[in-house]
Image (cartoon, rainbow, N blue to C red):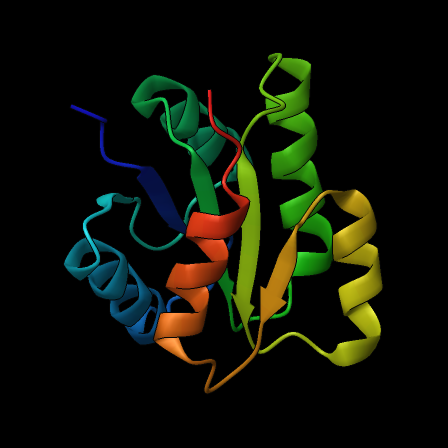
Length: 132
């Protein structure tokens, strides 16, 4: 029997707006993923540690507070420093279009904006997760 894909949904920094993150987390759960939700006000170090401890396949970060341009690259770098290079990174929320290229360059595979279709997120994740 194949194990369920494991996705960690995170809110970084002082971003307390977690409704969208919870909606996405529930969509993943309903689609058969195992979901770990870190809650609000997380530091990149704590999310990196959780991703390693939980042996996740996907890290999905929701951002509505604007610190994504700094915190998401920090998170990705922390995981790379720990030898974690097989995780699919996704970002979502209110991320200005002109900041998307910076996140993609840092290692985010895809950015989903407000109103993104949940089924599209699920299908993209399934098609692009890095199998171990």
